[in-house]
Length: 167
Image (cartoon, rainbow, N blue to C red; front, top):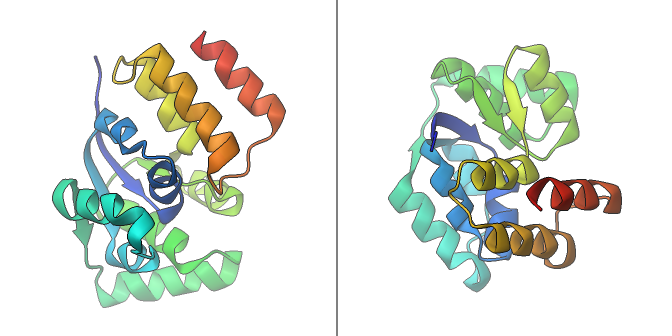
């Protein structure tokens, strides 16, 4: 089983997995890193207390330098990204991490243009299954729950494709 050594996350995948109680998919990543701005972005209400506990316990939260925060603001304005997405991109560069997890299409495009490997929540679930960190039944359940119970927008074609990949 090949774990991912390090990856930077923006809020989206963490929120979506938390919404369906599927943070176990994060076991694939040895060292998950988020900028403090992403940590602040996540609303910690009663529905995602599990996420807050997991973030504080298992995910490295990094305060970015003033220069990095300034660069994130520039990226945010130039590419119309949310600050969390632009901070994730800048943090990946600052920490020399090659992999970013985000569900934001614009952020994915910008991150790829900077040479990063980029995946979303569905990619994380599929890879977690393929690397045997999730059982087949659990992976199918997560994909269905993401489609039906989370705020992640998924097309039916994508869901069908992922379910075929798992089966």
